[in-house]
Amino acid sequence: MASHEMLTIQGLGVSFDGFKAVDDLNFLVDRNELRVVIGPNGAGKTTLLDLICGKTKATSGTIVFKTLNLTEMKEHDIVRAGVGRKFQTPSIYENLTVAENLEVSFPRGRTAFGALFFQRTADVAERVKQVAEEVLLNDKLEQQAALLSHGQKQWLEIGMLLMQDPELLMLDEPVAGMTVNEREQTAELLNRICKNRSVIVIEHDMEFVRKIAHKVTVLHQGKVIAEGSMEKITADPRVIEVYLGH
Image (cartoon, rainbow, N blue to C red):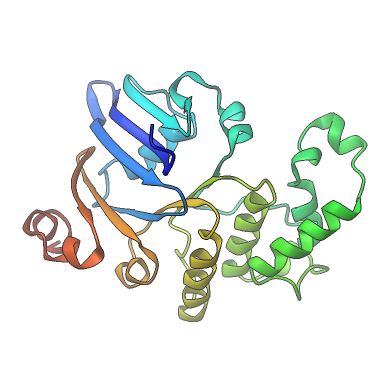
């Protein structure tokens, strides 16, 4: 496999009770690429992320991350290998401060044993500071997470994933429910964090997609029907038919 490819998916398929949610799907993501996946409801977008992170097991095909075949790995091993996933609703520790949320996400703090003997060493403090700045929360470190706005909670969760320094980060509708201003800032944030990792984003907001996507993949009925720049996608008759025309 060429070294510039971060993720190579070939012939991927999964069926639920005879319904093909993902059907013979091929998908390539390069290093440091920000890819957006769009498509109508039921197109298989979230299922694709579930397959990559091991939450759902494929019925056919392969998912290769760098040189590892993820289809043969358990969910926690996939995380350890460098794949981070953010779901639609933020799962943060509301009763902890922003700094504490970031600290417990540091790889050493992840195991029960690690959490018991977790030390706030200089490297942890440094990483917390660095990540907080990256996700626009450096002035909120001592604030309780419950008091953050919806958008800030989303950023905190992205920060919690960044603490583990994943090489592939997957985000499911990260700007849902955000204010216009928060969307702007999230676009800048994502453009910053893909400088040293690959990012896959599922999104409905076309204006937002336009601001961030290096390349767009359109799914329909579990298959890729189009791929390319936003300009190319929005001019594609098949895409207009299944998606933009609705």
